[in-house]
Image 1 (cartoon, rainbow, N blue to C red):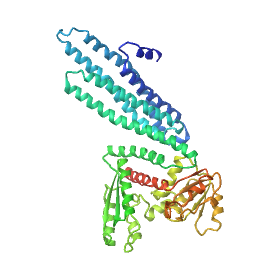
Image 2 (cartoon, helix red, strand yellow):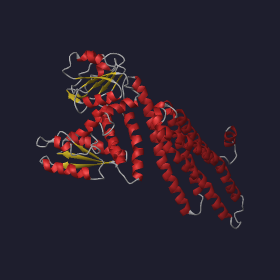
Image 3 (spheres, rainbow, N blue to C red):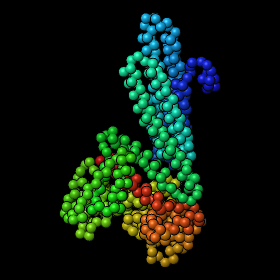
Image 4 (cartoon, helix red, strand yellow):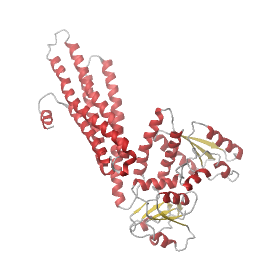
Length: 483
């Protein structure tokens, strides 16, 4: 390494920028290996063990290959130097130079290809690698981006001198495509790492942010949609909307954006407010029978002339991705691992998992008993071996019950109900409520009065609700994987 840097700093024509780019790429791959080695064998990441071992093997091979390309780049310069040493009037000089330029351009292009092949490892380690080494994933992404940007310069400088412009244009186009895709993906990994580090700082300030949770979920889900795409499958959610309420339209736009970002799609079936029970049931049955539809969601509440009870049980459990029907609720309460829980309670679990909040042995108070959030959340917490107390607005001495908890889930539907009288130091408070009061949108927790007392709290807006769309996407993808 010392010799390489010395030679690079000298007046010698080689090594040059191409070799430096290969070295940077090799170091990026070595960092991938390091993060994977810090992850392997850890109980927390046992589910990813096989994939992590594969990364160790592949990253090692990439690092060695790029290291070899350092020498290949230096050797590729020698024929160019020799060609320029041939007198200009010498027959065949141009052909010799042209061939040398083509060879010299092929090496940095190969550096780009090998570096680009490493980027999926970075994306996987962002989601599945040790969080203790997440900063090293960011450094590796930055180095990989630098390797691509450096190598492409050496492609351009050689193609610029070629006589065969069609061949030069072809190489430039290939390099441009690798650069654009690779640079964007490396930047996305780097920014996600920065968000995770910033989120940790914010967690210390008592606020559990959701965007890092969403980004991590989407990164993993995008891998699944790409795998499905190779089989010709695009996860699809069909949304049935009766009428055009503004809150439904707003949620619909958010769904569409979130699904498209991950490579999935949504379609909306808009029905008039005058739709009959028979018409909406026929549409549900049609979608349920469609093999290209993997999830069905019905916006509620429905008009009074429609029976939600009849409609919800027409959706097969596999496509009931929002847990509307009785069968998926039965699976939830049986805790048999089948079906899909409601998206909002599952979003709470996703947040707990991201922030490494273990429920086992914890005293959990759920302030709310609805079938949409409170009761399903109680089942999910019990499955994590929590000791659960379900309270509600009629519970006697509710404030003391909440103070006795290690973790409070607020989902009673009462604006700012959980205030400083309900909490103590050392608690975690998850606000699932969405309400409107004279000050605008708020949760069930009086955020300002509790945030300086408890260890951690989620804000509203910008809390659990933001994760819900990602959970709906996750359920739809799981349904597609089973199709």
